[in-house]
Amino acid sequence: MKANLPSTIIKLNTVLNIAAIDSIHYFELDKNFQFPGERHNYWEMVYVDSGQIVATADDKKHTIRQGEIIFHKPNEFHAVNADQKTSSNVFLICFVTPSPAMNRFRDKIITLPQELKPYINIIIDEGRKTFDLPFNDPYAPCLEFAKAPPFGGLQLIKTALEQLLIYLLRIENAKESAKKKKSAEKETENRLTNEIVSLLRENIYGKITMPEICEKLSYSKAYISKVFSENMGQTIIAYYTSLKIKEAKKLIRERMYSLTEISNMLHFSDPHYFSRVFKKETNMSPRAYLKSVTIYTK
Image (cartoon, rainbow, N blue to C red; front, side):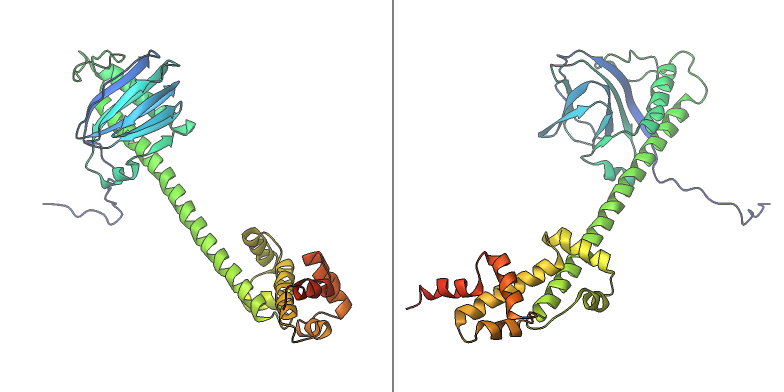
């Protein structure tokens, strides 16, 4: 009779499963080492333990430096070559996995955090104990078991590799989340900047203060000022003043109003203040500007 499982039992799922391995190597490469390349229908992970290498992935070449990992996807032509400048130590493992999560590693070069290095050390150590293979021979034959492999060696290799990949995926997911968050924040900041600009343009012939802008947009003065300055390269007040002076120049060129009238229309406190602001923005007084544009009028 089959007993009912307690409700507290939790079925374990597998987000990333290593089904098989084809090879494990740890190469100590001469600076002139050259490998013509290959193609196979399973994944390959190459980690540079010291020095640097040139990795070919289809039609692209990448310099992979110490502490970096490159992933070669199934059926991708790939090669590992020394850079002819430095010797290097390289760890390589080829493996089969049906897990869709591995697609996150397609065309990826990742820097391995130091806290994850022990997982590679476990794979190397258990690989040397479990298989009878000259690890420094890139042309070595297929994996063969050692005469007396330790208990559970294959499982330790499997679980160490799975844990390493899961932790790397967490890091990649965190980067992607941070990127999306930053993109969303930037979108919000751009929208806010456009709303501020619209308010300023709507009030060229009026007056709007920072408290009024904050109230209309429901953001703090500090945040609004920071966002606008970062996006526009100047303060809100400076931009507002620039808009008013541009409009003043347009009105002066049209010669329908006196300078005093223009000052009043644009809500400057008095004509003298208007003149000072105009000169600061244009390096000439309103009268000098009027004279300069009148010269070319027939």
